[in-house]
Length: 504
Image (cartoon, rainbow, N blue to C red; front, side, top):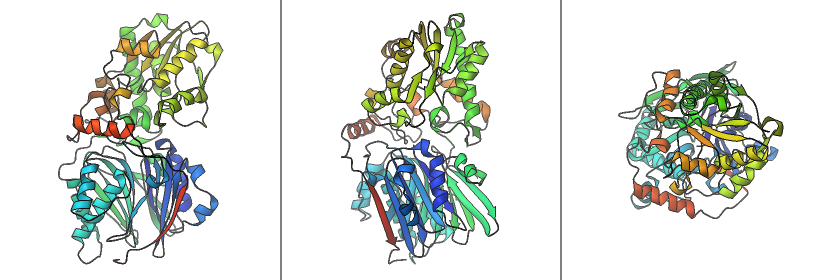
């Protein structure tokens, strides 16, 4: 899970990219980067940390131009926490190209070997995003014999990428002297949207992972980029689009609706907020079936993403709804923090209980999901320390029993608390008196009722079915090994001013 943005504007684009990344900060807190194009030069700055910490005024001044990309990084399988793997990535042959990528390739190692052996391309990092960029560049080189680029050539290259790459990818690419190219994998696992803005100088265009970034910048949401589709905006601001996949099937990651996306986003025709309210509705029905609602005094959410579900659950069960935990908004999202010890420490810094709301009461705590159980265990303990008589825990999502390999950092099976445990064993692990999970069918139904045209999902972390069809036990073993042997972290930032390829 990362956040990407690309823009073609009639005025300097650097501030727009910076502000857009702030709106997408929830999608990645590990690193940030911005690249722009001006007068036959790519300009880029990227580094580890939050957007506000990476960029200074001097960095922004070094990013002139009207076309650009931005990225907030969230580490995925085997990736290191360092500025070298921050995005965008750059390649200079056959054309100067920059790429910002959200997702994860499941055949990155095979592609990397092919790049070295057959395509004569060297990959400098362990990032699958750099692999994807080189695959695109190689296919473009193979097709464009005259070293010129037009929409037909670009769309043929994207079609070739679809044939070679497996996994999830929602990308925006900047091609030197040519324009912006955005494309999405044939399953549409990760989100990507297109927006436009009418100005006195003419139409401007913007791509982003979520529509909240468009609207926050004054752009109008046009539509989602379709699975397998590529959209190209040339330097004269002409827009071209084409379906580049043979059999595209919209199968978005359902965890976007559960947790990852902002509640005010709309993805593939689904209001994230409405979907979470529906999840609360169906979770209430299960609580009514499995527990005695009369023994619950109050319903409390874990802020912020579980709030819509908790409010609807309390409403349907006619129970009191109270805010028992106060969130420190200057602490990052604990789910996307690497390392158990970091997450455990951050829970206490991030959430503080209001003692009077707990003392002597039977509490039903609602969270969006339970992944590793570290956060849930600390929350239950805080509730008991604050005087709760009884603590019941409800998850708006089903048990996370399987690794996610499409861009979410939970690849190790032994880290998932629900892996090989019953609900009763999980309740004992996190220390609650009772535990209720959402059913998989109800989670999917919650999203489908908001948009009935959406009928397929990637729910692999819940049901173990990987939609790309290439994920094996051996693959899962490899990414778990990579997770246990991370690269050495390096700090700082990277400033580059890159001239175009001599082949241009």
